[in-house]
Image (cartoon, rainbow, N blue to C red; front, side, top):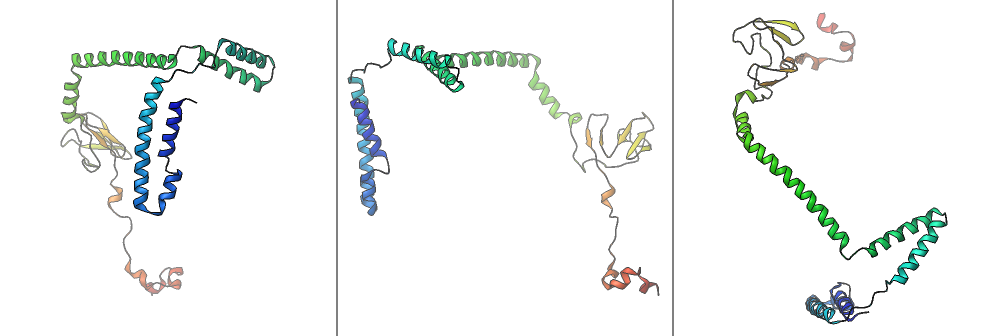
Length: 241
């Protein structure tokens, strides 16, 4: 074990809230505060020292050598030739590890970074092209004009008549009923459906509606408070007599 790794391990132990020093100091809040602060300060000092020592220590020789790689390759080949599905899966895992080891350091991270840069470059090209076309075609000015145009206004319920016998597009023009909630203008023969909605000559979209619910179908009958079971079953014979 390297000295820097040992110092990092000690620092991690000091930062752990379940270490023995902090557990013993829980009987008093002031003592606990001092112990916790001291442990954190000591951990920071140890981490700084571990980083410096790590630069001074010689690198440990790697246990991965051509001989060990060849041995793993032979094991993977034997597992693959066994015919056992589970052993064949293990052989595939060993092959992937060998490919990873054989690759240069940071190869996977650099490859991923390069792919992301390619995607960002393609996105930038498409975005620049779209912006250029939008500027040439003055899309922003067109959208602003459309938003301000009264022809693009969409009405909400009760902002427009739910039913009328004169044409919405031709003032005073009479309309003929051609179906349920459907009326036809006498001038241009256009059919308006008040229940499903319609679009007028200006392009305004009028949503559908129904006026049937505006007038209740039943009215209160205060005399019902004098009813009993006999009068209800006999059809109000008491009031008829």
